[in-house]
Image (cartoon, rainbow, N blue to C red):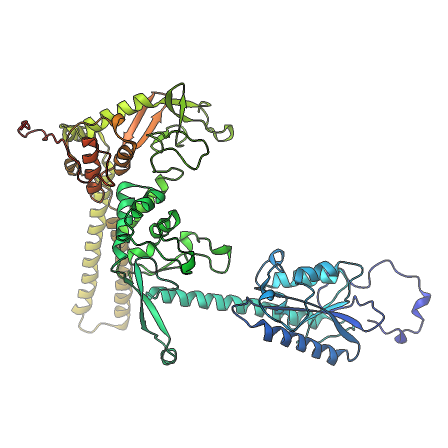
Amino acid sequence: MVDQTRSPIPLDVFTQGTHSSRSAGLTGPGGGVRSDGPLRVAFAGRTSTEDKQDPTLSLPRQLANSQTALHTALPGRAVIVAHFYDIESGRKDLAARGFGRGHERFTIPIPRDGGIQDLLLEAAQADRRFDAVICESVDRIARRTYVGTQIENTLEKLGIPLWASDEPIALNGKRSSQVLTRRVKQGVAEWYVLEMLEKAWGGFEVHTEQGFNVGRPPYGYLAQKVPHPVAARREQGATKHVLAPDPVRGPVVATVFEIRAGERLGYQAIADRLNRDLDRYPPPVATAKHRSVGRWTYSSVREVLTNPKYTGYMVWNRKATTSARGRNNPPEAWVWSSAPTHPALVSVETFTDAQKVARDREGSRSRPGPNTAQTGARRSYALRSYMVCGLCGRRMFGKESRGRIYYICRPARAYRPEGHPASIWVREEPLMAGLTEFFNREIFGPHRRERLHVLLARLDDSHLHEHRERLAAVEGQIVELKRRKERVLDSLEAADEPSPAFVNSINERTTRIGAELEGKQAVLRELREAVPVAPCPELLDRCPTGTVDLGLLPEVTLRRLLDAFAVQMRHDPEGDLVAVQVTITPETADTQLRAAHAAIAGDGDGADGDHAAVRVVPPTGFEPALPP
């Protein structure tokens, strides 16, 4: 403010100007006060989340400090007439601020006229109750500099200054030092939060590396208490927890993964199987026991199959805790221990296979019968989820038309690739006949090994040769580097009185060779871990020989067979052909054997069909089976 008494000419004789007395957009404490009586001030307060701070103590302290600052700077000339405060994080964006209801959980001895959004809303009204806003410190407005200055600028454009009790309150218009002080404090406040978050994150990384579990142990594990590493915390009775296998529920986890990886069943189908024997497969119990349903559900099976802790590695930050309403974080945000920290319930390979099933089965279901999720569904389609369009890669859906079953690909126009017809229809009858012939000839046929050898001979195995050649080359380079290092050291030993320059030269050469050797050894480890998969025809011998008519099998038996062999059928509209692919691995061979026995016997009864009678024909080269 300019003191008129210092002007030799009365100011009221001049024509009023047209520009504002304050520069637009200039931030910091300033004017905008236009009330005739005492200065009307609104109090703005904030505490952190209700579980981290006590609002019943913090907010009254903030208000008391604000009142003291006003009485000191403007004795008898200012009064607080409105109270706005929130219980929420100060790191939120402005659009997300002021909507919490945490204040309802406490008895706070301060009247509340609203939150930060209500403050800004009333500030924009012509009949607002206040001329200025005061807070205890600027970090109570926001912990982020951008949001704090955003609120400050919004108020200033409305002619309302924002003051802080720990800053000088002046009305003389000189604000440069005040603005500098405030910006430094805002920067320090934001830096402090970020530093604490980084240190806390680093602490959790070390905590994870040491194998300590955070929260409730996963199903199949027990929380085993260990002494707290900090002596002071130990004296207070504090402990930490590591994971130990549950002797009852641990084997259930292994069974769930075996079913998923071996039979490729969906979450609900696995839950249905487990629910047949709850004594053998006890269901999970919720943290709040009154919420437990007493059986396996789709979500409980999914939670088991997607938890990487079962591989023996400790993993943290899988779920968002303070944001995103507890949703899963992306895998790249997870924190892993560098090595296993507790006994594994499943191998890494089995866990990986189970995750691949989820990717392959996306959008499909494995339960037999009509789709209960669709109103009015009257029938099911035996080859659903196995048929894929070769032009667009979409899974084809079943449809009945004039008494015949078809599998159709009909993408929307916006998602239809160039050259893709509006719709593609494939009848189920020739599909089933061709699939039956494929299994009887390539999987269960007596000449399957000979046919597989012919097929493998046509495959391009150049990638295997390239990998072997590169592996041999890197191994040779490592041997040569070791020899070079030995020769350099031999030259040092052969010198009677080596000069300092000679010693330094030897050190530089050995360091350079050592770094190169370390790099080659890292490449060698990567090559050995990335060995291309080589065909193993011997696995085919584990399947029985015989004949089967897939069209006559009960749907549950058929789908069990196709899921066990990971059948994929890809339709080529141009040649009107269907390419069939099956996968046999050592991990799935036992499951495939049981499914094959049940299919050849035509047995659809029983939960598993493990004891079905089998018509087995000896492989080629053996004496034919004689009737009894």
